[in-house]
Length: 266
Picture 1: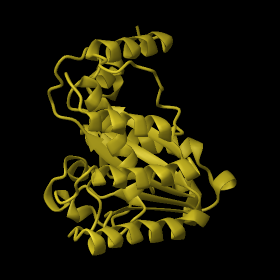
Picture 2 (picture 1 turned 30 degrees about the vertical axis):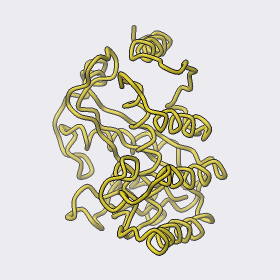
Picture 3 (picture 1 turned 180 degrees about the vertical axis):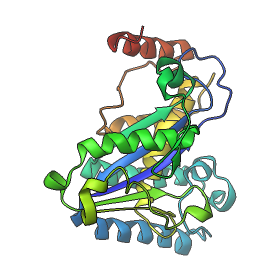
Picture 4 (picture 1 turned 45 degrees about the vertical axis):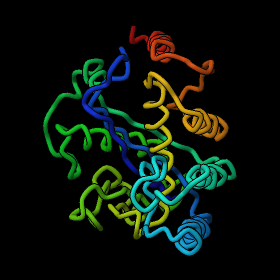
């Protein structure tokens, strides 16, 4: 089993919401069976080569924020061609419906669980930093879900956050019981195309959160939200709700409140 992980984050200030707090760090893991890996790597590279060849896109990887906003090398995409890229990734996800796992650390996480506000280096991760704590907590969960007995060889690939992390090991302390049946490392999405899938899912989750807090939304925004809904992301950490067009931040907050009540947090 290949488990690919990418991260996403928010600004420090989130206006208008009671439950979506600032300085949010989120890691997203996607579990992909080994026999699909070669095909997916080829598909990722082929799509990028098509865009380079037919749309003169000078990019070595997909940057979904820039694609959505048509910035940088993606500014030449017109007539919702940028959304076509999201349709491509969504169609691949819908075909395989991989299991997705999400871990977020934000202000509310730490107020709900004050014991997490600690310092130390665990398995090379500085858990006093939200970015590292989020990854560490996700790895702890993955360790209990994915075992050698059930899933065979485990290959963990985490998107590197700095150039210095490229190729460095990750998770070997937590997964030490797996011995040689586990391999974990930080890699770049330019070198490892599989990471683009986790990057896509992470962007979808972060963008849908952002759109839920916007005072007004464009037709492109609503089309994107429909695309995410139709994907039916296979994730126990997400809750799908129906909202009328023109919904407000308070409508989103109410669903957050009900979820917290159901979990005994309020």
